[in-house]
Image 1 (cartoon, rainbow, N blue to C red):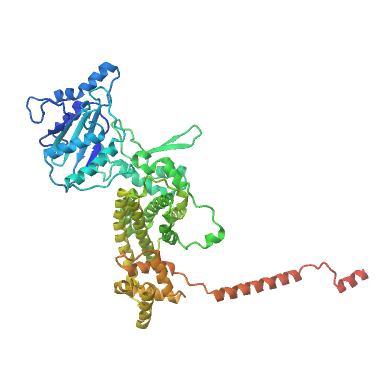
Image 2: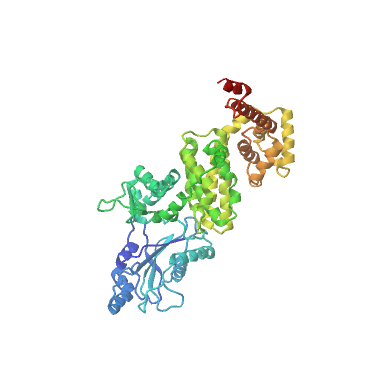
Length: 571
């Protein structure tokens, strides 16, 4: 059940006309009052031919007029409106049940506290099977204004209890980090203009797509402008950027002027200060040796960064930072992955956007590896090969599962659900990404004796999961991967233990497939030959000594040789 509190209005009679009218598409049927404040003595205009909307409006507004005349301060923002809607799959609710629900909503909101005879005047109108509208005038009988601060949170909590008490679909509890729901006006405008999304939704997607491409706030503004998005930047006297608002091309008001939406109105994590905090957590300058030892491509870097994600969630501020950066990595991957995977990846990224934010403060600098990988991916000109894509997709699946578990442990219901939705999209992507890899691997199986030996390695390395792995349809492909790694000098037994330790296999649908992507990633390079390295080291040292000796022998000597002494005497 969703209770949407609308913006405060000024005209009681105008809202009544809508509630009792036919609706925009003749969807209002049999409008009538199902509940009202205790003092309601007016007949219902929906059931009585003699009742008028004007009389009902005057009756509801009476405390407002009295306050205006007695206090001399005109109250105009007095119309409180809340639409309460059941889920499409919920059962039919009777008028009596809707009336009880309306009573619980106005009590929770503070419109009419329980047992308060001097509360605000209100009515609940039903004009469809699945929802009601509550209209209240926010001046009490004693002339005071009700305390409505945080009424949305209280009403939301009341809805969760109502769902349970009436056997309705139970929604997740909010925490003030969700995006604002589109207004009816925004949805109707999008429909009229043939847009699939409302302007705030469209702008949110464009802003999230821009973040991995930029390094600071000024670049962020410039990127949006270059993308054709009208931007209104707010600056201080010094020229420093203080805020921003963006508009959708073609979204104009009645005067033909561009409509702008501040970042904070689009999504709670897209305010300028929060975007700055993420962008300023840049990668620190690396030692040249560390730079040389980094994985070969941004796709490898991303997989490496995801490998350690589960170890970075012990501290809540670090966990929140890594989950936010994981969202940026998903967005970057959706932009640069092979074309046939992009639509599903974009769906995963959009679903995970809700899981990126919570009330926990993020220590953004701790997530520089993930964020750096995302930026490197969007700036790379070449795509990854099949096995690299499959490894990254498998790593993303596991990372989002880990994020969902963290949110669940913290009681973040909406974020948990969003992460689980993203997992479903990512699993589909992983299935498509690994399919050609499996075909290639299965086409060149190792010899039977070698496969039997490798099966023994599986039983020794992961005894608890061995039978599931060997029964997996992907086992022949895993055997090929292990044989390839062994040819590069790796020990299959050790690779299996390391891969199994990186993620638990109990919840994996196909454990052999999980191990394929892990081992292909970790075993892609030959094992260093320590003897050869020692020999090269000795050779290098010997060569250096010889070069130094030759160099020294060519320098003039400080002590004259006998021949030089004799030559000097002749002179």
